[in-house]
Length: 565
Ligand code: C2O
Ligand code: CU
Image (cartoon, rainbow, N blue to C red; front, side, top):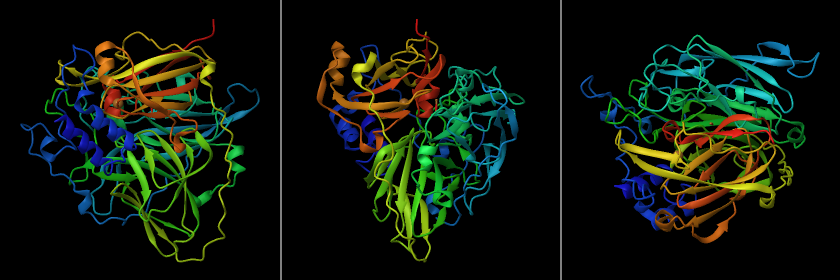
């Protein structure tokens, strides 16, 4: 059963061996079914998961209505819709600068509302929850060092679009259905503007958040973060891009204007009538499922769109906004992808690669050169799954401009400078109360007292010890970090004696991860070490797994940045 589940997952990543590099699959073979749920004698084996990818039969409580027919995206003609480019949001007005007298900042207003979105020419319109009527929402463009403020307005309908699980922490039936709060992923903001999960607003309410933008150029993204609902709210469509620019990046003369294209990737399941299908468990009172994969890959909200390009270099700003899917991006003709940036901005220098791995919430800044491809059609795909077609014009190629060899200086944070190393386990349990999987960070629930309390301005190492069988993308709010290394360890030994016995060498991050990150793939059976300086603000933030189903069921913890004594 467990073995089957693993290979099924690997297949959906787009083929064997590419889930997260060969290491992951090797680990699966090494530790196999023992790894999960074996953390201590009290732990029963994991519950049986929900029907994978939600067959039609699993869609609705059987007694209520007949099953709704699923949409079969692979039966639709691909590449018939043009790739939508989200509009850049215009300010609603000016506001006084928060700290500098006599200066003003741009103020924005973003409304969350239900809208109908056409995902494909041959699919009926889909009801979604959106920012400003679009999925993805409008792109927010900011300049480093120039603060902005945004009023987030909850104008959603009272009833939720998707099935809420009231047994999850913070999702009680006594609360408003359409709770929402916005987090700008990767932004360094004061705690009160960070979108703390419990700071949600109900329909009719609004909240004004301040974004200082005191950080380097990077592609961030904004999405819902409401306690117990974020997986549903994001699946329903509440996500968009937030791009920070700065002078250092401008000076590099990278492809820009219509040669710079944001690509927001997310997968969904649909019913044949065009409506979103969010799979549920067999228990109507506890519909949570442990992960959700769609068979319909959307790029900027369209199912397999096309984009017309000129023979020349394009900068693609890619964010994986999926609930659970990991992408292995490659070009159909095998052409080189030049990765120039990661989550928190540019790498030190471009990395030439055949394939770019992207777990949920990770970003990749890539340059693809179509100079030699005039008149042809190329496809960006994830393993065997086609995502987006590039139609290269039959025009003369502009003179090829080489990418700069140096993009920026990234000073490594030295482990010697760290004041502490925190060991944080990732464990899977069987939750007997609802007969389902439960995953915890450091063996703690969301509501347990705060255990991670870094001092403002200090450097810490966090080592994640993954005793489960899954890759978990772990995200810390507020800070950017560097990946130190990953190392296989003896899971069985750890589970029986508590001794952490590493096997083999510490492996440095892949070249495409060797920059500033805010989300790290924590691989099964491995110790993953990151290093961060807790700069910014004092206050309460969160860290969590960015597989949204996991985060909603306790795989999320608060942390406090505290003032120096
Ligand atoms: Cu992408 Cu806690 O967020
Ligand atoms: Cu997880």
